[in-house]
Image (cartoon, rainbow over all chains, first blue to last red):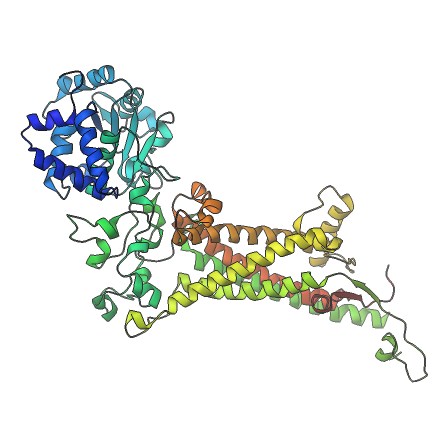
Length: 360
Length: 241
């Protein structure tokens, strides 16, 4: 590899035409919401900037992020990002294996010190010295820390890397821990979702590799361009919410009419993601469009905010699973009874003391 | 002898003026106004809040012809703003008003007499002492309860604005001021849950508040309910201790 090999060099060598390349630039610029001038800037950056390698590692996960990624809507995006632009190491889908594969890590760490992107799918379990996830003969947490040392930035793919997801759900026996709790000295971009939307993933990778900087992140470390609005804010069923028209049961008339799924436990009002705009599988549909509420898969600890099919979450602090209304009504009942009893005692006391004072 | 003889300025059958009752002006007009505006806002907030979490049965017809949930949410937000405006003015009055106006915003934990009073009132409520103490402002136990309620209101305001900022957007002043709540609870579903629990705590407070006001009015022989209307606390016993 030449010292200053650009993305464009690699693409052309792989047989991608210039026409396809510009198409890719404008598509990606559009998906990032950057406008047409950015497409030119992106093309220029890809032609002149040195190539930034991406190392993709897998911790405790289910590979749904990878599955989503390779199904990115436009085949071009997938081809460009996955096989040509930047992906140097991905132990799940790469051809190399064993020592040959691990050698790439060392080579990248040395050659691109402080310049490569570390994309992490899944998270490290910390319990028992990290032995619940062994990767290449070592606990994954060690490999993660080792590769993170010299990375420019880290992309935390999916709910696992961002929040912990199902393996971190209560009681979290392996102590699965999100990336930002393990690596604290590197910029981390959270791209949550179970999995994240393919176009969101390729968009984030392309943004960083082309512009050489991180996209603007929100307070929780998610790219603002995809995670600053809730599913609810852009939901096409929102008018039914505002009108007060809800699905009450899965097979009722309201369900057939496509009313709001709020009462069926839809977590759209508390979920930040781009599903209601970008949608899935090339813009075909998304959960709410297919008649099922959002389960809030891109939110922190969503497994523990259930039930999925009820609006009010259970409150586990009260031992038995009860929601806010049940806990609240019980509290009101107890206090109401206590007040009534207190009033009764007060009345009895008053009568008896009055009698006493009259007698005395 | 008769009740009439005790009323100030009223002449009894023999043309003698009744002995005046001890009356102290405690709650100034802004405090009383705030109390009732606040009470109204809380009623609206609790009711609409409940129906936001558990909406009414669906309305028939086209979505474009209905806006029930929208109106309920609007009422919730409007009442929320009324509550906050009231709270801010009330905070100002805590500084500008009389001593009793700032009572509910702090606890005099360094005051040993006051601490003794808390335990005395506790014993009074547990029927362990025969007579209550008389206080011009809040009795120490009520003082603690009111302070706790102010904390609860602050919690509801903060979580309420954090939730509101989700709709107002990430560029809104609501998010700039209250977005830090999401650092505590990254998943806003949790904020919904605790805001909802907070509503029930408010209901619990209201029950205890009304009960103890009525009870004190009767049993402690000092005016409570009318004091929040006229501002004057009347001590019905002529002499004490």
